[in-house]
Amino acid sequence: SNHRAYNFNAGPSALPLEVLEKAQKELTNFRGTGMSIMEMSHRSAAFEEVHNGAISRLRKLYSISDEYEVLFLQGGASLQFSMIPMNFLKAGQKAGYVMSGSWSEKAIKEAKLFGEPYQVASTKENQYRNIPSLENIEFNSEDAYVHVTSNNTIYGTQWSKFPNTGDVPLIADMSSDIMSKPVDVNQFGMIYAGAQKNLGPSGVTVVIVRKDLLEKANTEIPTILKYSTHADNNSLYNTPPTFGIYMLGEVLNWIEEKGGLEAVAKNNEEKANLIYDAIDDSNGFYTGHATLESRSLMNITFRVADEKLEKQFLVEAAEAGFVGLAGHRSVGGCRASTYNAVPVEACQALREFMIEFQSSNS
Ligand code: PMP
Image (cartoon, rainbow, N blue to C red; front, side, top):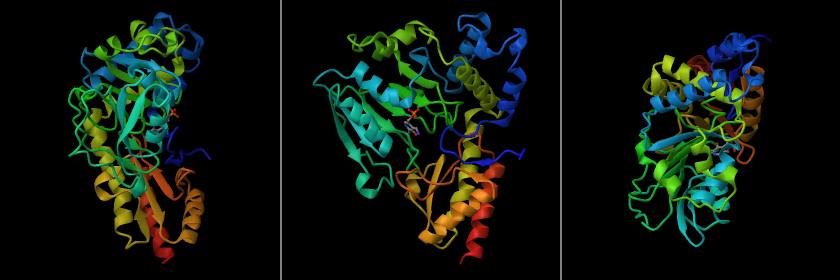
């Protein structure tokens, strides 16, 4: 079929149609160069313009000050799980990890190889239905950093307000909610995210890191794994994922054209509420996984109360053109990922499908 699917994939996920069409137009002859962006040197003037344009748009959208570096790396958010402790944790030193899902677990696992990470708080016993409350937690000023996962892609929970960690740098894995709303970057020592949900194709990882952390970082580590290497070389130390950076720049441009992060946030709230309302108004036919106050506007996780009907729901949804609604393989259930580029029409259509499915099956 020719039409665009209702794409609720968790990542890689929907990209803006306008961006895809522009990329298609520019594919074989990029702005008069006679070649695609993938076929030219990463040192060429045409690519450098794309590269620096993407960095400056990112800086502008998040109002990032000169105290921070913006880096484009590879290896996904998963490599950051290792690079963070490798650069910032010294042997015997502690770092706090807030456990709010599987990605936090993967992050702390890597830190154990370099120092002594500890769990600041965890909601595992509550099946990660909520973000831990940190109001009464005192952060140890000796800690190298505190790590949080801002949006838990698998469980469908999201921080609405970040803890004040004082002088201890706060590091956030924002893989699944970066650029989905305005954020005060100054609260963080570092923010990182794989691009493949809100920002573009997989293969690029965005790192926003405060310069003073780089100055204090460990030096006895491989060159390519030092943040300072990439900072000193404007993320062009080695060949970067050029096509991905081009796409990322175009997605940021699209965000600007949509009215910036305030507008995007408003749209995301409206989209998520269409689906959450269908859950909440179902008299228990659908049940949300996350507690109300921890609900994510990016990943909406729910069950169909009757297990047999849940299978049927997923089959019929797929037949009706909805893609990516099965929950993560580790938890089952259903999940609708409503990242920036998922149109409101797709959420409206899913809402109607859910209501219709309920009335035919109860
Ligand atoms: N952190 C979060 C919150 C994620 O959602 C994911 C991927 N789904 C990762 C980390 C891992 O990212 P990557 O596949 O880019 O390594």
